[in-house]
Length: 285
Length: 285
Image (cartoon, rainbow over the protein chains, first blue to last red):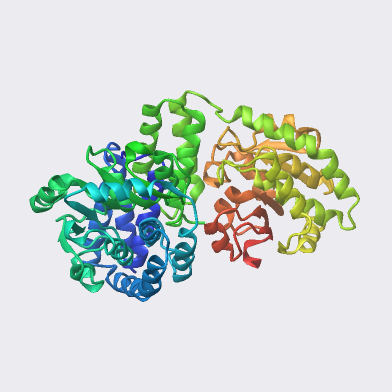
């Protein structure tokens, strides 16, 4: 997906949120803000928004001297999601359509996205879980279920910390021997990396690989050869979240996107309403 | 008031709103967006936000080749406010405290601000008028009433089209021989100019001058000598709206600001809530 003009104010808002969270000194904050404004003024709008987000967070990590500014928050949200795991697991097992319920919860977990909003509290997560079980779902879970049955190699592209626990719940009812789960190659925002996969038990569930990249999405040109081999061999890809959608919606592969459309630009690109839960291939929307 | 970091995303949002309203060709829109991003990356944050807004709207006027892109909208909102005039006038005359009611309505008129939001419809204006009569007012209208009684020369700094009719209602219960009303020197956004003062009957009510500037506020260094003479001679200044507040809150004069705090930055600067109606001198807040 290209960068829309409406992404420009949002880049500045994201930068501001991030520098305030990570850097306390005003002059350093200002330096980054000016650098990002200048970079955005020159950016190729044909690139997807995560390309700029990658640049922003690289700048922030460099200037803050901190490799993983969101580390504490990531651990906290992983733990919070792990605390919710038993009741979510029970909700799936008690459900008449376990697959659909697990998909709904996996999408609900996508609310834990510090790129879309810094205001993600536990009340909001609980409410999203609750409403996800009954709110309309844009797309067809039966189609995804059939795709899972037909697939030989499933690559599940993870997204954020906390959310990774919700992904695990879905993966646990998939044919796990077929599934490889991928995380980002390096820390960026609150996106899940290998450390998070270990903390949340994902590495005890299925094979986990990292994609070699620090983009908050899946920029194929930036991913490792090892990851690309698995990506290319997979006959079904399940991609979580906005960042993966923005970077892969134009790719001609059998990709099912699972996300909450948290911003009006994505919603308009998909043709849904902001806040909608989405499951399906882009061409089917 | 300085430019806060939170103004930066808003500059981009304002630019986007304005270019979409005024310029239909995507390449021209993109050119302006890139120029504004670059200009903001270099701007002096000690300057007030209307300095950047002035720059943005100059660029838009130059590239669109249109001196007054908001002309039709301005006429429309003036006419709409004129249509409301009789019932607002009656509300003031029927009120036990006519001065306070007129101040409340003048502040309500400040909702017609295309800088703060493009979404200003007639329902919103009517709702704002209705609630303005009973909502809490931050500040003291008796103090302003006393200041009016004590003053010899009152300069009333106008703000937007439509809103100018609300100002007229307040001016009509002031000692009009003491009052001079000022408008912007040239078109910028939906701000009122001399044409609007004529259309709305303000020129038939009190003396009207223009300030010689195309900033959406009162940048004294940008105003004409004629305006500055009157500004300096006035012993009471009544300043409407956010733009006048942002450009004059640091000036050591007897200035009463009347505005709706429509953005969180202004609200925080004043120490009130977003949406609050404000009347008073900055030092008294």
